[in-house]
Structures are given as C-alpha cells and as structure tokens.
Image (cartoon, rainbow, N blue to C red; front, side, top):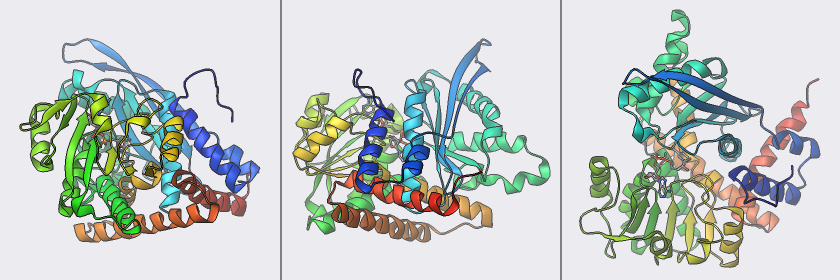
Length: 424
Ligand code: NAD
C-alpha cells in the first residue's frame, strides 16, 4: 500500500499509515498484510427519490465491505454531505479492527448517503432510506452484512431499513431476518442499552484509564466535541462521577461554562433548538478557544480529522478518549505523543456500540430480550478485557496505544488466515 505525499492525507491514508506502522512492528505475515490492505467489496448506488414537491432527486449511496474473516460484515450508515468513497473505506476498515479487538464474531463494513439530512422533510428521509435499502438489499443480510446507526442516522432510520428489507423477503422468512439491522427501536427488536452503548463504552474506558493513573474522576473537568448520540451520552454518564462538563462544541458552534454545564438540560435544549449555542448560562466561544480549554479530558465525538497539525498544539488536556472515529490525523497523533497527552484510540474506545449491536443481533437470533443490567455488565466485561489486552500489548511492544490496538486486531486476523489458508 502506498500513500501519496503530494496531497494532504485523506482519512483512508491515515488508516493505511496506522496499519503499516503496526504491521511493520509486529512483522505481520506478508500475505495477510496484502489481504487486509484492501477492501472486499465497494458498492456505490445512484438512486432516484420523489421529493415532497413532486420532483425527482438522484442520491448517491455507498456500502464498503472491508473484511468478513471473523464473521458477517458489520458497520453503520452515515447521512452527511461529505460522505465519499475514501471516508467510507476508512470507516469500514476501522470496523474490522474494532470487532477483532473486542473479540466479537463480526467483520467490518460501513456505508452512507451523500446528503445533508437537515434539508429534507421526515417523509423525504423515509423515502430516501427505503429506496437506498432497496438498492442495497442484495448486498446486505442478517448473516451477511448488518448496518447500524452512525452520524445523522438513528433508531427510526433503522426501523425503516428493517421494514423495507422484510418487505423484500418471502413471508415465511421474515421472522428470521429481524437482525438484518441493529440499533433498532426497542419495540421493533432493538436492545436495551444500545442507544447509550457507544457513550457507555467510552466512559468504561475512561474509568479504566483513571484507575491505571490514580486519577480522581470526581474532580475532573472535561470537554466534548459533538453532542449527538455519542457525545451527549458520554456527558450524561460522566455525571455519575461528579466530573464537570465545562465546554461543548457542535455544528452550531462552541459554548463554555467554568462551573459546569448540566448535561441533561443541554440534551433537552439541543432537542428543542437543534444545537448547543445559546444554552442558558453558557458563554459562546470560538473554535480555537474551545480547543484550548484547560481541562483533564477531551472527548471528540463528532467527525474525523479534528485534531491536526493546527489544533493538536492548542490542546490543554491530559487524556483524549476518542468517541468519534478517526478524530486525530497522523500528524496530530505525532504531536500528541511528543506532548505526552494520552489517547484511548477509537477502535477500542468507541467499540461499545458494535458490542451492544452484537448483543442485539444475538437476542434477535434467539428471540430473547435481555435486561439492561445484563447488557451493561456484559459490555463492561468485554470492553475492560479489551482495554487490558491493549495495555499489555503497549508494554510487550513498547509502543503507543493506537499501534497496540492495531496489533491486537491484526494478530487475531492473522491467526484465522493462517489456520484456514487461502482458497483455492
Ligand atoms: P450524531 O449525528 O448523533 O452526532 C454528531 C454530532 O457531531 C452532532 O452534535 C453534530 O452537531 C456534531 N458535529 C458535526 N460536525 C461538526 C463539526 N464540524 N464540529 C463540531 N461538531 C460537529 O453522530 P454520532 O452517532 O454521535 O457519531 C459521532 C461520532 O462517533 C462519529 O465519528 C461516529 O462514526 C462515531 N461512532 C458512533 C457510534 C454510534 O453508535 N452512533 C459508534 C461508534 C462510533
């Protein structure tokens, strides 16, 4: 795999650089290296949808299936104007590593539609989702490729995908297909705890880090970028520790409050007004001020490439817990290492979502519904074990956490490929 040095690295370039660093250090088998360095299938669909005004618009959607050596392809669907093949490839590849690190029998995939969902009515979004599902239907399936929510998608969208998919299979098979998608509303076969799962996993990782570093979370100050599913759940769950949320940034801007923002009230506010800016009692600050806020922990929970050559020097925190996928680019990562700022990498830190998706998939297959404490206990055990395994690997290879997380994932995949060999 080669990476162009002439242009600013893309998100997928960052994945490849991370992969190469780990593969070199662990001397990954050359054949396995070639296989994992490419995706399996890259599906792009253009499809027409009738808008509320009667006109037709054409949308472009993607599904990239990176690898399914450990189990069915698995990964979210994103609705965003910047969705493109390079980004989806990167996100699909990270999903393979994530499932391998936390040891669940899934591979990696990701998809999305290039659109700004705020420009469409609910009924248009429903038709777009249903038509996208129809276009993808032969490439997804409950035992083959299982979508889930990601940026700007939610349980309602998963329910429309489920309903459309079920309409396309023979009636006798429908009850066996409910696990074609995870992150569904609970009433439609979703799991208790799936909505908060990614945020919960981030908080479990922060708790482990605090134990390891003799750090008192009760007196911690933290900042969050992105106040959607992941960011808002982290904030609500951190409250139980007494930690203070002092700054938040979302797509509408950034706010600050020295003595702490109330996460529940902020969630209500965002639900009503669509963003964090103008939250009563807070001060509006610019992006640079937000990034420079003095705090203990920073939880990026928005998009990729937020911590870069320009912004990494501004940060004034001890720990970054990556709720988002790929929030730190390669140069940003090097700067943070020089500055000795700890990072819990995305493929470990935000794996709570795919873990509880796995629990939902299992419950659907077994016609069960688990209690919330059962889900939380299983999640905590799995993510804590993964955290410890990655920590041991940092020591065994004398390397950083991200590279160690890659080594854990790649080692698991390497064993499987060596055992099975390559057909024919
Ligand atoms: P979401 O759509 O619920 O929320 C996204 C948030 O990011 C919103 O508050 C939005 O305003 C904010 N945002 C968007 N652009 C921004 C910008 N330029 N600057 C600052 N804020 C911006 O999405 P989500 O599901 O919470 O996902 C957030 C991140 O977490 C993504 O990287 C996603 O891939 C990752 N992730 C999500 C899950 C999940 O279960 N939802 C699981 C693993 C990882």
